[in-house]
Image 1 (tube, rainbow, N blue to C red):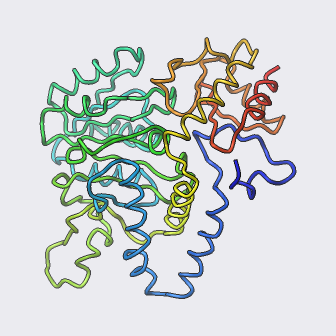
Image 2 (image 1 turned 90 degrees about the vertical axis):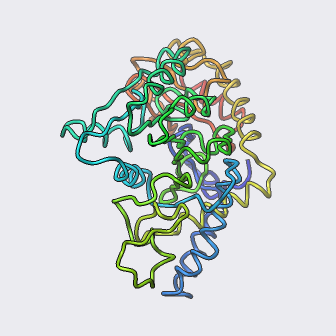
Image 3 (image 1 turned 30 degrees about the vertical axis):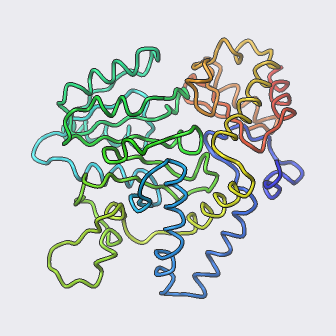
Length: 377
């Protein structure tokens, strides 16, 4: 795939097969990085006027298009998803432990934080096991339907397996209490699998970022905010009231759109990269669906070629393509050793406990898949 020459077009470049963890940046992001610097030098204090008038609206429009959201202004941007988690938590009731429903497979941006609050007696947490996958949706929906939670938080695609929650609307619909905050972690779903949020846009928060499949790097995370939920987060930065910056009202002012969940001053360079990559994908005619089809072909090439007793179709945590996101997870006690072994061959994969994770991207081809398969011998 052309467009990645600055990353892979040099001697000694690794075979990077951890596309679920970190994507290389397309070449167009290099000029975008320089553009951010030039704008800062050219505009000085007026930089932020330009960012809010042009860069952010363009990025919002890209996110809304990819997620089929009705209103791009529902999108807030920030440096990481953990900041958004804290802001959402700051909206929940005080004076008692918050009641949380989640799963056993959430990433650390949420799992670590809620476990720490649980240690302090500030949260009562119910965790639904993600396995067996065949009954996960029914089990989670049954818990959610009890209506005893302040927050329901689950991933669209689980980071430790790749399992996809296909019918998001069904799980959201199981939460009957409109006072309950519903949050979907879409970090492994955004730009990885087709996602349509229009039917639940007025009910759920959806958070994700550009570090993985959006190929834009760090510092460009976002949160979709439903219109009438979480109007005044207690954890608030001055950008949450940017539109009322010159107001003399003594009350703390909030924007009415998604920017009410923004924080304070941040590095906007990632937004430049994000816009450049999204524009490039459009120019190339690359969609989430077409990129997923390409990755599936590379996955099948690898699975057909590998002769490893530890890494093959039978050790896949999620063997069904229709239930799997854009990476392969293999269950093997040798996961850590395999990562180290491949590293000696200049091949990058990763693992989480006994799950070896392999991710292919649009910059891979059949020869890359065959090289990886051969490296296991």
